[in-house]
Image (cartoon, rainbow, N blue to C red):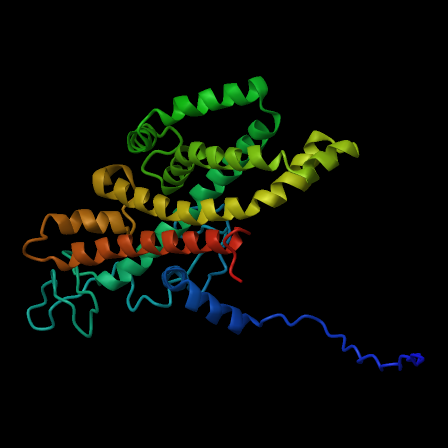
Length: 334
């Protein structure tokens, strides 16, 4: 009995369909983010609302940037969300006297203060002041702190030791006392200056930023791609700028976003504790200080200004935490 040789028959290969991977759209990405990070989405909602409060029709008046009316070099007009001029005083139509500490109503959503001014309008203008002071301060702290942290963490050795001891010395002073000292002995202007306050806040924040950046750089400098850059002859400057800095950008963004909440809180604290050393423009801290004296009889001013501070800080903290989770490869959304 012979085994018949079986000749395999050719099987037609299935046609391969080539297609580019599908990338989710912006709306789908946003909805997925909201489902997975509801607290982060709530934080971003607060941040976007605060930004919207600062937007107004710009004026064709240019000059040296200053706070709070010309933070970007051009004059900002009245915020669109402010229903009235910030210094407009309202009087009783019958008696002609100022309306003081009026409770919230349809005409004045958050009531009026002691001088008869609309509280909602002052909250809106205070948001502009707080936001731009925070941006200026964090820009300074992030730029200087990142530079020190990258150079110190990359070279290590005696330079790292000297810089860290200097940062320890600066950080040993209580931040609030340091802020009050700087703005009280301000030699640059004849009176209180919000610009000086912003730079003081930035100076105080340098130590915290550089410590976080240095810690990230110490681990990044040991990565294979950094070693490869050294092998091919890249200079130290090129290695720091093109190979280390881009890979720590996520940490810098998170530090910046969370730091904004801390700076807003510190700026409000200055207006509350030492109002004589800060400009008397609408400020959440100044409003809280004014409302504190009459809180038992007229609580609205203190409640609304304090709530604005708390919500702003909460919003930036939640947004920063969500950014950290999204930008960290170990925690990135799938």
